[in-house]
Structure formats: C-alpha cells, structure tokens
Image 1: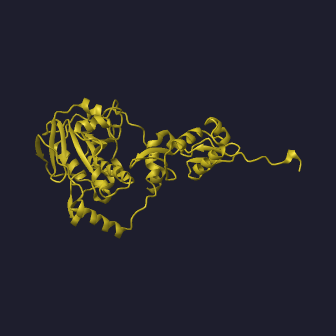
Image 2: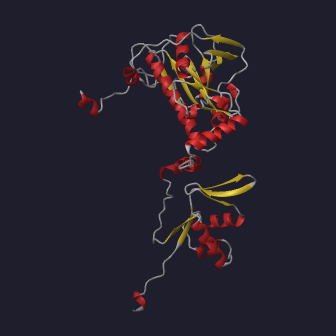
Image 3: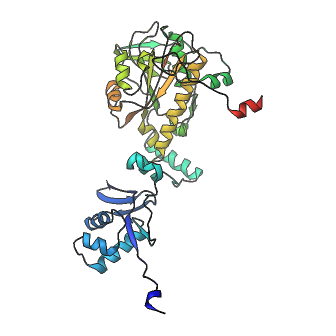
Length: 385
C-alpha cells in the first residue's frame, strides 16, 4: 500500500459536558453531571482539566493549555473523566457544536439541573413506603396542615354560593387585564376562597393525624399551599392584607390598608392588574411536603399543586361572572417580606386575582383598550357540529 493511501490516525477530541454542576454536600465538594446522574468528589486537578476542555480539544492541545503536565497521567485522567461522562468524546472530523441541551440552554443551569436531576427517581414499593412513613410519623409527627397567624381581627366568611354548569364555565374561562368599577361582594370573595382553598372534609389518617381534602388535588394530600388575600375593593371588607384559614373559612387580618400601587409592585411586569378588586398570593409550606417526600422530585409536585389550585380559582371566578387572572411574574422577595415568610420554609409561588367585568365587553385581555383579539373556532369543533 502506498503511503498516500494509508489511513490517517483517528483524531480524538474531548469537550467538557455542558451539564456539570459543583456543590457542597455533607462537608464535601462534588462535581455532578445531572444528565447522567454521575457524581464524583471534586478535586482541584479535575476542575483544572475540565476547564481546559471548554471546547473540543485533543489531549495534546489541552496539555499545552495546562502548562505541559505529564502526558500519560493526563491521558489516564481524561479517559476516566470520559468514562464518567464528565467529558464528551468525539472522533468526528467536525464534532457537534451544540451542547445536547436544546433550548434548555437559554434557561441557564438552574432549570435544567432541577428538571434532569429530578427525573427517573427510584420509588419504594407502596407497602414498604407506607410502613416506613407510619414509623416516621410515630417518632416525628408531620407538620400541621393548617397555618395560624397572629391576627389583628378575625372575619368569619359567609358560605360559598355559586350555581353554574361545568362545560360553559370551562369554555368561558379567560385571563382578564381590565376590570369594572363594581366592587367584589363579600359572598363572592368567600366563594372564591372557600371553593378553592377551603377544607371540604377531614380524613382520619391515624398516626398521620387529620388530613384535609380540598377541591384540588395535592400530592399525598400534603396540601402545602397557603393563601394571603390583598383586599382592595371588597364590599363589607376593609382594605388590607389577610390570611385565609381554610379549616374554619375565615379571614385573619394581618395588616390594615392595601393599594393598587402595592399590587403593581408585587407584579412588576404585569399591566392592568392594579385595577383588580382582590389579589390572592399563594405560598407553599415546604416542610409539609418534604416530611413525606425527601426526593427533590417533590418540588415538581408543589408547582403542579399551585397550578391545580389556580385553575380552580379561575373556574370559580368565571362561574361567578367575574374577571380572573393569574401570573407567576412575581417580585418574590417583596411579596414574602410583606406577608412575613422567610422564602425558605415558606415561599411564594403564584398569584391570582379578580375583579368585576367591565361593561359592554365579553373579554378584556388588554389593560388599555376594550378591543379583544379576533377569535376563530378550530376545525375539529366545526366538524363536530
């Protein structure tokens, strides 16, 4: 075979995995690839080598970048890091430029780390899980399912009142950003709170204590969601900040006074919501869920729970002929400071609000105009008629 026809040696390149994080746990520093769930104790030499492979490089190129370290030792370490999936390996003439994270890249490491690190967890068999949870409850009872606050005054609420059919309510639900001038009635506010966050029944959980049941699902019936009401324009209720007690269907006044400017500060990127009659701020009491579910996947359950409750709120408001909205665009720290929670054991997740509907419009999605977007019926609904 002529020299010209000899095969060229395969060029092997390596690149640092885009899904590596570094953190302290139990007094040790770790490196973890959260896509592969591989975790190794972090050492300075590992971090230096990974830094040298910030883009596709051969071992020789990385050796030069590292200042001429011992080649055999570097090769051995690189192969070990590749085996551990902390380094990616390619023999292609043009290795892929993309990181393999797709559009997750734009959300930075925070969202991707949580999403991928909480996938495919190992669940205990149900019988074993129940046995271990009962044993835990005997030595360490679960947190109380209802929060109590120091109240300036307590307002017992009237019973919820609503009469509506499900399908029309589902089809009518929309987000509103412009509101009428009519105040919310106390019965309407009581109906919203009672049918969304009110305890409907108690279950005797034995060693787990009394377990609340509400109109929305909650993982393991932990019901971590608490709600604080900023009342601005509610007939028969003074403006102020209230905590809703779902076990006794009551508002506890925490602070007198509330203004549209405060609502705008809570929701700084949202136009129009300062005109609402009431704002409902949902928090999660983390220990209620963590007590039963130690896996980080439980945080997914908390976020889903907040969504369940918010949809229930919007449907109840729609059934009452009101104009609801919801948003996660919150000034977290400002809200938490106002309601008096630490953002760790109890943290704000979601906001929902409501007002009366402005006259003469079927929907007001824009804060500064009565004009509504043009709507059309999808083909599947036209064909079903």
